[in-house]
Length: 180
Image 1 (cartoon, rainbow, N blue to C red):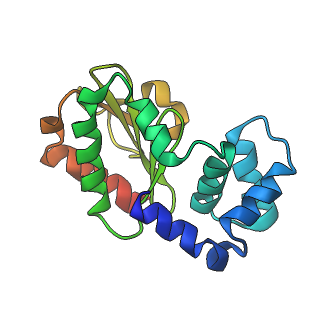
Image 2: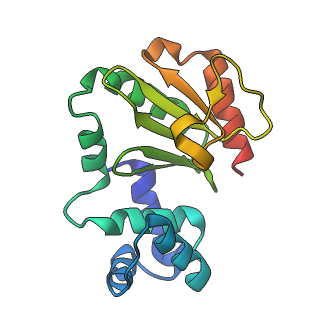
Image 3: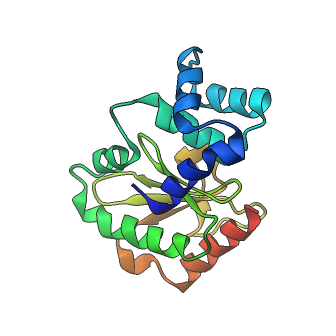
């Protein structure tokens, strides 16, 4: 399990008032049609921060499938993209202890206090990196959010780890700083 995710789970009782298992039991008593409904429920009814609410809901969805399984499934048949994914994680984790990596079924959210990046294997040869960079102009490389919609403001298409250069790292750092 990702170290930051394990730390978040360990801190959950102190920060949210309940353990992950207690939250899972509570969510089993409710019916939500969308992920966001469950997240908003926890935020509104229990004053849980977005990062914790999202993690609780994600980890509660499928008892048999953990976050590592989500990542494994995302890259099945797309193993050539794993070096890009791993390089992106190395970069964002270096920004600070407050970075949380939250694997979901089809993508991986990168969260500080709010999500600032999203990693999604888009095809067998490309990862789409979504960024939240409000008021940043669209360029050839820093494209519009595309399929990410309102989850991100921009998208960078990556086909090799070498594309994770100084400019991309600056954009990730800027998105991280704005998520405070």
